[in-house]
Amino acid sequence: MTPNFKLDLTQRPRRLRRTPSRRALVTETVLRTADLIAPLFVVDGKGAPEPIGSMPGICRFNLKDLVKECRQLHKLGIPAVAIFPKLDAKLKDAVGSRALDPDTLVLRAVRAIKKAVPELAVITDVALDPYTSHGHDGVLTEALDDVENDRTVGILCEMAVLQAAAGVDFVAPSDMMDGRVGAIRKALDAAGYTNTGILAYSVKFASAYYGPFRDAVGSAQAAGTHLLSKATYQMNPANRREALLEAALDDEQGADILMVKPAGAYLDIIRDVRNASNKPLAAYQVSGEYSQIHAAAKMGWLDLAKIRAESLLAIKRAGADMILTYFAKDMAQILGK
Ligand code: PBG
Image 1 (tube, rainbow, N blue to C red):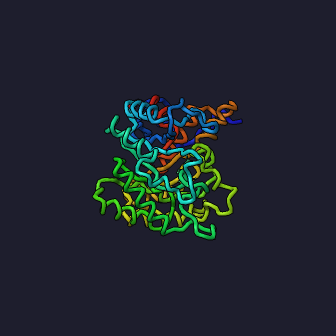
Image 2 (cartoon, rainbow, N blue to C red):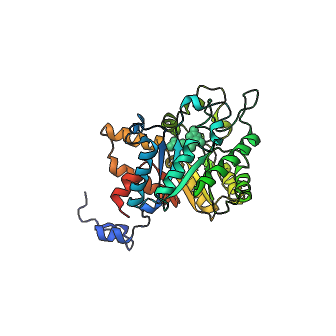
Image 3 (cartoon, rainbow, N blue to C red):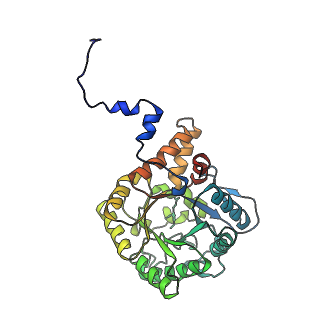
């Protein structure tokens, strides 16, 4: 031991960490309520909110309660919601017909929200998984060995136009079919919806982190039991260069906002896309990311409030301008407007 040991240092980074005020002055990344988008689940009927077992604190709302929730979120300063419908199994079929029903649940939800809280931006998924009996994001070939790309894109275009007509601010293709962003942009413009934006799930990985969401919307069958894997359209978690290719394609095809999903395990991809494009960038902190934090907190192993904030800050620091997160309401209550 040398008690009088002294370093001759000009650089002492710890100087800036000495007090809360000094730390506040040199904070590089700030998470704001205005960065957050709340995903919400909706069901038909008049029942009480249905808790989702694997997502503590998250419910499927009936239309009326959904509108109420949207009002609250708007008051809290959340700028946008993303609406996901859960259909009764008997309304699903092999081609996802209900996706093109002009009175389908999600469209009624959008109209109700836009009527009650017009200032709140509304986003809807463009993909067939809530509507197909097999749970895939598109229609299958006759041999059931693939999701048929081009035919699926044709359906997605019609879906997007219906959603635009219902008043959404952004349609969000989450299907990962090739060429869908360009086709949807053309279809929206041709129908006169030049002001409806596209938030593209540009880099969506075939991830096990979607598990709880599939419970929430009842699309779990495609995840494992079916012969056809979602890996035939969602990306390989091993690939960084391919992520840049996907992002560039959506950028060129007219996406207004690019998205990376999941977020927490893909911070390098968020940074890569941030550096490669000047478009705004969203990241989706998906259901499994939410659930694992809750599970660890329930075990008493992690501090819920701290991990929640840290996980979101990391996503923002990686380069995301906005974050879809099931923690949106909790965070808004803490952060304020
Ligand atoms: C469907 C869709 C999924 C999610 C958003 N849109 C699941 C999937 O691709 O199976 C996942 C969201 C989450 O896990 O929170 N196209």
